[in-house]
Length: 625
Ligand SMILES: Nc1ncnc2c1ncn2[C@@H]1O[C@H](COP(=O)(O)OP(=O)(O)OP(=O)(O)O)[C@@H](O)[C@H]1O
Image 1 (cartoon, rainbow, N blue to C red):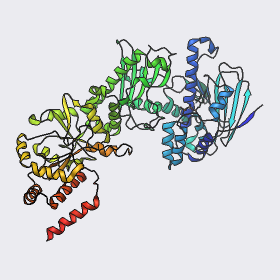
Image 2: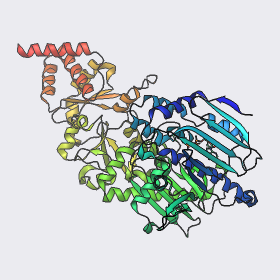
Image 3: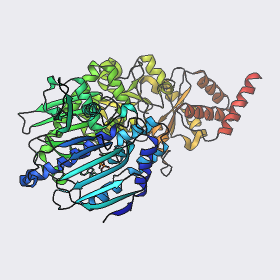
Image 4: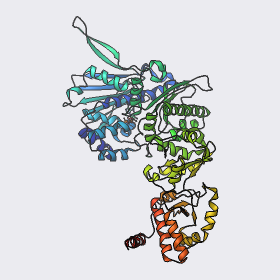
């Protein structure tokens, strides 16, 4: 008795897109079906390791492809785990994957076919891609431990039928009734076409993918032989010297669904340590799709003696390298290991340490030998590295040398090590930094003047997280990070006498500005500018005030100090006004104007813009008179 069932709404939506929107790159359906078959074989192999008798006579785990020209059918068959009646309904009638909703939303938005293809490449749509090339799909399957088989059939339009059948062999057969209007280059009944696709997408599948290969002998007789289309040997098992760059790339594209080539490959075998393992790691060239979403699963694949144990084993990578893709194969892991046990596993910790060191070494080597390539890496992954370090600050010594910063002295970004090596002898023990939205803004900060003059290098922190990170890091190799806006930087010691001389004027200005500032004082840090604002607080800087303002509930305010340049013409004018009349209203207006312009140059808002403009206008009119 067959049942007719409706697809789940999301499945309908996906099928509709598959059938009606995609006309190129349809080849990927084969990779998806082969990968499903391979997964089913993995599961079967796993079960048989505990009890080999479950394989019965059907011992060799394999995938078969059959070309049935008479019926215009392509058949992909495996003797893997198979599916029960309920599993077929669950797996082929719904989409259970997390992130499906987000994926479908993105699909709806995707305008071009290429954008859709790229999304599919990153997400994987699995079985449903069959409908890109088929008018009808039939699945016949029998679970290894069930008596009866199941037949599922659909044309992808909205419903499917399902019924119990007799099926002798264990496993799953997917029969694609190919569309009639496929292009010539999409002739999936051509054995050469299939061979090319398998080599391209599924070469490293570790089970033989067999086909009945037709060949014409010299005598003109058609000979049919069983041919294995894939090379099978897992790439990571081979010696590095035997692997070409293209093979590494191909393996990456196939296994990690990235259309871009990886930036770097790290392949090594750890032997002689307390645990043996092989690692094949890839640093991608672009941040993986959906990396910042909850759905993104980080971690490495875990194998034991070429047998797949699990995907996305998180415990193997520190947060700051969560973008690294790849796999670990270690004979020391039991195949039955669960995620929970794994979390507490000491061997895993050792592997993690090893991998981490290799990644750091690889990145350091790129930084040293291929700076341009490192810059590309930094542009993509710098924010992830910084955020990861922020959350794991106790690990700073490991990765602080991988950080790059803009700086005052050159167009190139520099490392902390470079900064320290270039420090001036009289600079003291401080690594100076300035914060702003970009290089140009910081270049124009009044406080920068004196450092330029003294030729002290300053790190430019242009990312919002930078200052928070630097404060948390506190120092690099014993040299403390110090903001150029910090109040306790004093360059000139005999400044004190000058400050005492101007004490009354400074007190008056403070009185005029009231609560706006904590203090008014002189500075020797300014050259061209008359004044600047610095933070009185080591914890909340001016820039943090800007950042924290975005979180409206938290009214953080940096305490401010107004610093004046005693050598500036304006200061001299103020001195003169004060001498003539200490209570002059004009002095108050000057003080307000200097305070407001100092806020503006720091990128902070001024409180009373109307008054600011009025005061400027007043000065302008005075200048004419
Ligand atoms: N050949 C097969 N043998 C056994 N089960 C299968 C087979 N093909 C598919 N399935 C089952 O159907 C489910 C859904 O398959 P589908 O290809 O849609 O997604 P997936 O394989 O889970 O994800 P993806 O292909 O995107 O990695 C699979 O998870 C698996 O349980």
